[in-house]
Image (tube, rainbow, N blue to C red; front, top):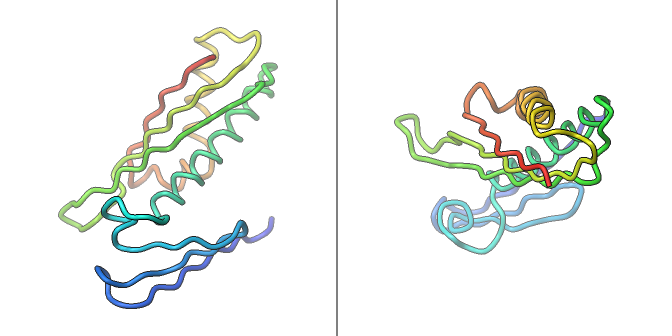
Amino acid sequence: MPIRKASARWQGNLPEGSGTIKTGLGEGNYSFKSRFEEGEGTNPEELIGAAHAGCFSMAFANKLATAGFTPTSVETTANVHLEKTDAGMTVTKIDLVTNATVPGIDKSEFDKIAEDAKATCPISRLLSPGAEITLNASLA
């Protein structure tokens, strides 16, 4: 399997500095304000959310298809909670919110497959020891 790469550069102190994050898609700016306030730019938590939403969507689509229910679409948002704890700033929770169009499936089977995808996608397995992961799955 290929090794995926991303990089970051930070200049200056924490509250006044700024940085760039590079992925295969390009480069984004980040800062104290984009991370801890409502400033313009990206942040590490947003990128974790994108990775988790993408990973879950792929895993869910695969598990649905394997069970005989090929989805028309799977759309997922990951809401990443960054909170101050005794240990410092910590990602404490990620809420996955997904909406899928899956012809021919009943809600019970849909929910079972969604929970399995949540538990087994590689990013969930990476993050679940330290963060609570919730799932709200809607069948369109």
